[in-house]
Amino acid sequence: NSCIQCSRSVRFSETSTLAIIERASKEELERRWYSKEERDGLRADLTRHLLQTRAKLATTPMSSIGQDDLYECIGMERLLSLEVYLHTREHRSIHVGAILAEQDCQRILGTHNKEQLALALLSEQSSEWSVVRACNIAAGYWDALKK
Image 1: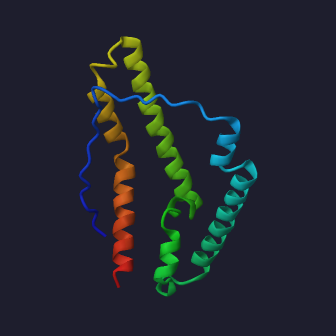
Image 2 (image 1 turned 90 degrees about the horizontal axis):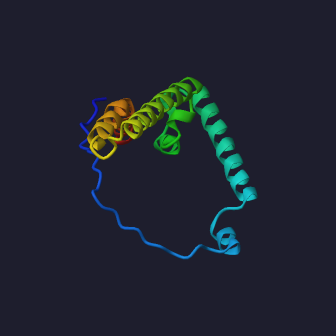
Image 3 (image 1 turned 120 degrees about the vertical axis):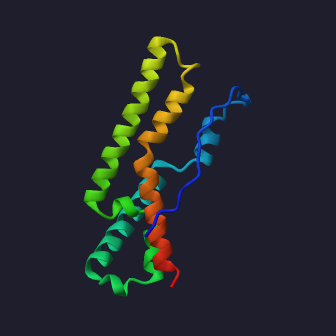
């Protein structure tokens, strides 16, 4: 399971385009977005599916896990194990904290325009764990599904 080197870079634009649009009415917003009941139903469906998938993975030998079963895991990897979930959450918290601390430092020092590269580099370094993890997950799926 070798990780493919991911080519990526963060760039900050010197200018941005802002489009001003009319604020949508409350009725329009309600029509566009899921209601609380719909969101709760989606959350319940996800939880039920997650628990079923966890149970299946816990009781089925890996040699018997089929491609369809693996496809159902895509996107839920961090949720399938409490240990992985906690580890991922800790890394995310550290990453967000590092970025916010750098932004605060730049705001206090008044260097936010000059130091955008520093913020981009910090973000890249801080998120390296996530990039490697995502590459390894993709490589694992690739190996498992190419049969």
